[in-house]
Image (tube, rainbow over all chains, first blue to last red):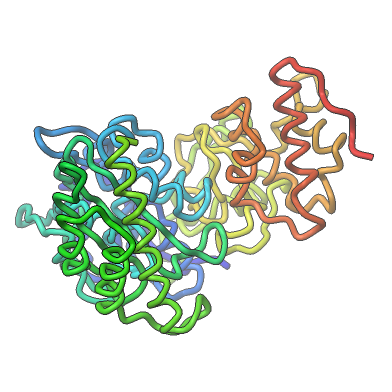
Length: 290
Length: 170
């Protein structure tokens, strides 16, 4: 399978990339790791006439602490997320999630920016970014704007990203020291998308949950912020009854499709199971400082 | 339409040798290696980024060369199975291990397995069985299974770490 023909552009700055994108409108597509786009091009489901390779743009790379935030450049690969000591120490859920994406070869190329900007409901990082309350930095010729991950997703492959805009970085408020987190993903086999997955980040004070965020992957046309489920666990010690209530609240906001991974009812039920498991793991980690 | 697309210059160091070609931008790295370089060790298996038969090493990382454009490999160092043997012609410890432990099976997936295992051992010289299985999860084999492949990688790890190798499989 060979993609259709296209003109290749390899800009060395964001400004240059934006100029190329602006010049060609919807005939141009940015290329990051390419592990979503290239397969689509091979199937001729995507036929961009201009491909704007972001791989040579240094300002899009790297992970750094910036005051109270962690800033991750859009072209940072999953493999780089896994290797980052900063993330392992400050936001281990990112590493834990990256290790559950595809396989080592794909993690070598696949980027955080591509994973979150593509709008594929099967991708894992969007829910994790919603859980972390991350903000996406979008740049166009007109300037920069910031959209919260919780507001970014509008439908399958449909996001707040506008024509002529590229996602340049993800800004994450550094989670509180001592927080607990978990990403629980049910999949049929290594490399698969989630049948259902749940991300949890919480803090514990005096043995009780002080704050909590819960989000879900691949059980709707967008990642889902399970706000009600998160509220239900605050002030509790995540006992079985609370976890069940939270799981039910999470299940209530899902709208999964029946597909090869299971029926809608099964996938909704698994969203609940993943929520309860992630809650238990995150709570235990917060208590033990693991 | 096709003939209006400009050919792009690509310079890649393949198995230590600098090569320069003009390619159609849509040329995938696997086709560049097989058809431009006549390096047919890297195989085209599934073409959907699943099977890993096309795995090569690019700047020290394992990549699936069916999902990388040759133009993206510009100015990188690519290593394929053809460059794996030692300079004196003897087999690399992994090649030896695959032969000794019968990890070769039908052989179709072997070049990708070898190239993935090489980077795996570079990143983690002493992997546990679980780490090996996790590390080769992107390489699919349709023969008898992975047991001998795991043993072959353990054999190579032992040899590279200066330990005695286990006896060959029966």
